[in-house]
Image 1 (cartoon, rainbow, N blue to C red):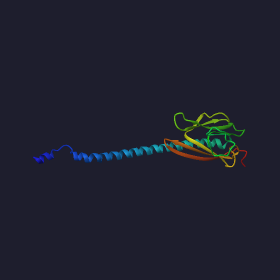
Image 2 (cartoon, rainbow, N blue to C red):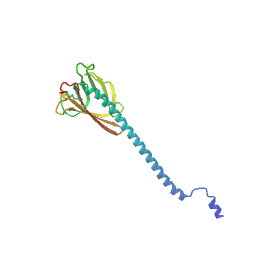
Image 3 (cartoon, helix red, strand yellow):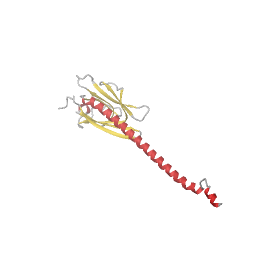
Image 4 (cartoon, helix red, strand yellow):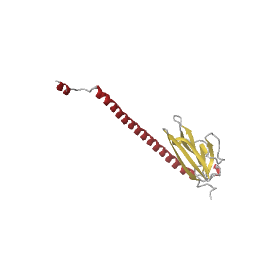
Length: 189
């Protein structure tokens, strides 16, 4: 009779449950942790790719406009002061490049605009030598720093400009930098 009773057992004993439940919990925790880690890695990679694409788009567009200009005629720093008569390294809100008199566009305006729903700036672009910029060029910008080339010249006398853009998206930050020389500057030899 004892042999029949052992053979017809259909459930788990408390000891079996006490042993398997923690093991099962650890397995679930490991799977959950790995899944969350992979999701965070994917999110991080997507943010990095988006920022790289933004930087490439902005710098490609700016390069075309800046190198055909004759120089900087207006520069507003992040505090709202005009600084085109200095040679300081600056964080900027707006910069205007002037074109030679024979060019169809008088100049190009690049200005940062605070995004109303997010904690970053959008870069806007316009044509002319005064006023604002209305066409959106790029997003996710923390700040833009500029420096004249060479460093001992003022912006409105410089042969070129160095631009560094800091991007930020979902806690991920990247900085990209490029230097441009003004092809149509009368100051270049």
